[in-house]
Length: 125
Image (tube, rainbow, N blue to C red; front, side, top):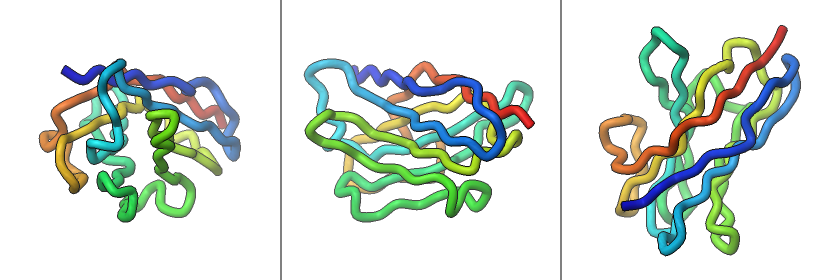
């Protein structure tokens, strides 16, 4: 069982930046997984944010964050990042790191086997 742990959330003013990190429990290498990030606001459906294939060669982003967010992987640190720039109040949500075995990532939450506990991001106007 892979346990994912997110960090880096917090309160930031609109226009600011945050970097979320996702690490795996010991004994598990994130470079063996395709990775993604989702977010959810209470009372709303979970929303795809970003994803990255296992190779790191292909990334995709939701239209709402394209050009502002990037996803990356540091294999040496066994960490996946979500860099969020030019944050907007509508980016406020709990952000979840997700992983699935295999080469290809997905924009669908049901395709992911492993989920972190989430980290709160709040963007004030």
